[in-house]
Length: 342
Image 1 (cartoon, helix red, strand yellow):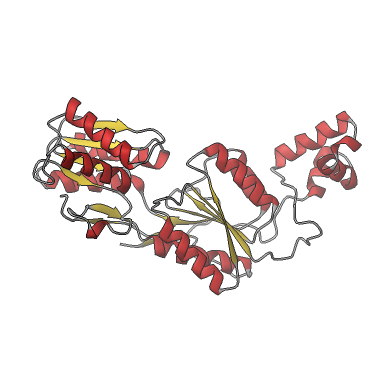
Image 2 (cartoon, rainbow, N blue to C red):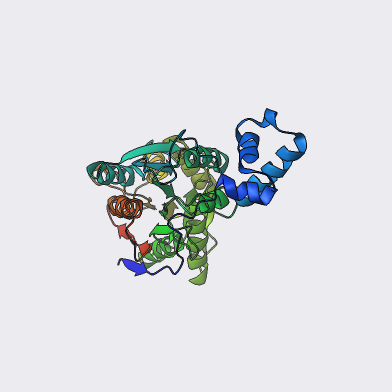
């Protein structure tokens, strides 16, 4: 079920931190602040330190669009995603790109590789180019990147998650709810010894925590967890299944943090003669294309990625063209898709 929530937070239409603000805070003339930012060798060490301190405090990022006016529109939307390789985000990106293109906007795409350090560098480069909007996959935590986004005044839409404190606009769903619902789904199937195969990222961690809590609430054994780290490959899924069969051979249901890991688990189960779903049930996450055509077909959690992309495009275009967005927070929900593996 789709739920919509009003966000009381409002962003100023032209509230970007300017170089004049930095100069005022540093106690220098705007031209001096400009030299300190663009040609630091032309100012004294004392002045440079004052200006850089003011830059750090305000979150100011220089506008790299040479000669561009503050009121000009780039007709460029920037998106930062973890990955596009066998990714659950592809449907969202394709839908986002289609909606933007039809309205005369271009999409600039950057991949963070699930690295917060890479994401920070990407966002700094993006802000400096002053796009008309920024699309983020996930919620940006408190820190330098969030401060700079707030200071930039650029419309931002965070996606694929929920939080009571979004930067600006938000389209997503609850990862904790997914963990609980998948646990209940498997327990209601009569499964008693559950396992998790997960990658080492924060959203997968929240699904895992809620999954384990739901299992514990029903009085079952602790969930057996295999954390594959940064790897999200078919091979990692196979190796996780080897470990489960060796260390927890009584496991009869496995929830994986991605469909690719689930396919690896399923492949290794078949290689070792473990019947699916008779001996062990398997559930993935994402519902990437082709899963329904496999034998056995994989049960998974479906996220309406296309809807997220369409709504994000509409939100960003409306804000770029001066129209209000209300509500600014949308919960698109999710669905458990049962197929052969359960």
